[in-house]
Length: 210
Ligand code: C5P
Image 1 (cartoon, protein in one colour):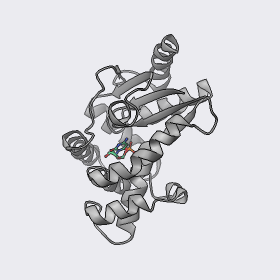
Image 2 (tube, rainbow, N blue to C red):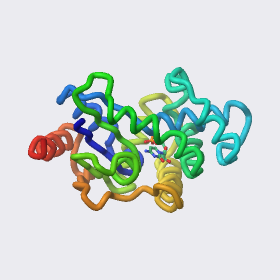
Image 3 (spheres, protein in one colour):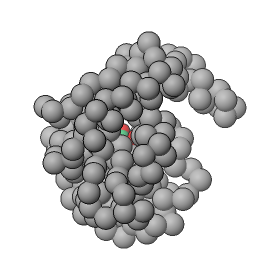
Image 4 (cartoon, rainbow, N blue to C red):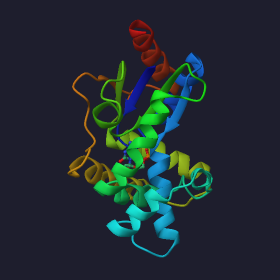
């Protein structure tokens, strides 16, 4: 099965890119961040701390497909809760099998695009194609601010930048599956690229490898 692994920090443009690549190639797409967000919000909504290993482990074990459709998963509260549960080894273990099964047997049967933080390093180290998508923290914060303002959320650039740095730090310093490029990943810096230009660069690289 052809697997395309797309990793990188928050708001680097991975999600948009991964979705477009999957649509272009007729592959299935899995947003693995959404799984961690669902586990984090399950714990939080039950009134517990997402960093509590026992509660988070239980939530990961009992995760149901409908948990992934909750409407509070896109916000910053879910993002912070996700990065807390994501640092707990038992949570990562529980979610590994689901992600690997999707990569090996995507529903459409043609291929799979997974995006996240550890797809190329841990979930699918054998993926044929690996992209590591980055952008400066300021660029990513500016994009996230526009997205939040578009949703009517009142916040400031400094708040968004601080939250983004906090999450980058937690994701890249954790002991298990830290955010880092796989040795064989192709790095794509989108700081000076819009979504269309990032897609063009990515698809050219992918087609050359398929
Ligand atoms: O990509 P997204 O911002 O939705 O991810 C939310 C959080 O989930 C990340 O900050 C990270 O802590 C965690 N995550 C992870 N491994 C993945 C995908 C997401 O640890 N493969």
